[in-house]
Length: 125
Ligand code: FES
Image 1 (tube, helix red, strand yellow):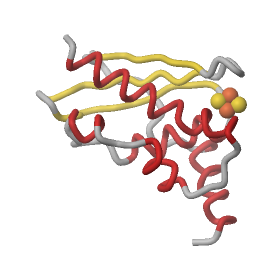
Image 2 (cartoon, protein in one colour):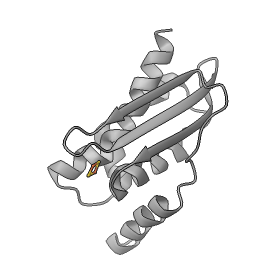
Image 3 (tube, helix red, strand yellow):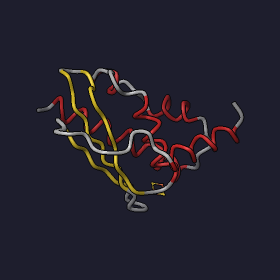
Image 4 (cartoon, helix red, strand yellow):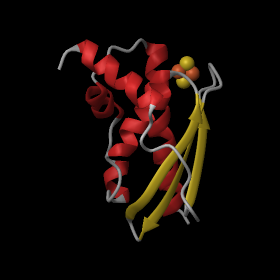
């Protein structure tokens, strides 16, 4: 896939996020922000034992932070807490397949950071 198509994918997820919303009676809510700009991502999850049953996010911010969170969540339904723990930042950035400056790297990883915090918080309960 060309870089242009990937850019278009990012914009499409930003304009029409498929995973935006709230989960009814979530087991965990995690909210984080990028201190350099104040952009926010909140992730809500309902678990079925150690599996993600329902997951949604809300947020405000740049196209990269919001669309990368939407893309991340796309693959999360049915995943186990261990699967989430094992996602590396490097692998996720590779999956996004867009060129990112160091500042933009923080945008792209905001959702993953928030998701991991949510899972660790659930495990710790
Ligand atoms: Fe704020 Fe991207 S500019 S998260």
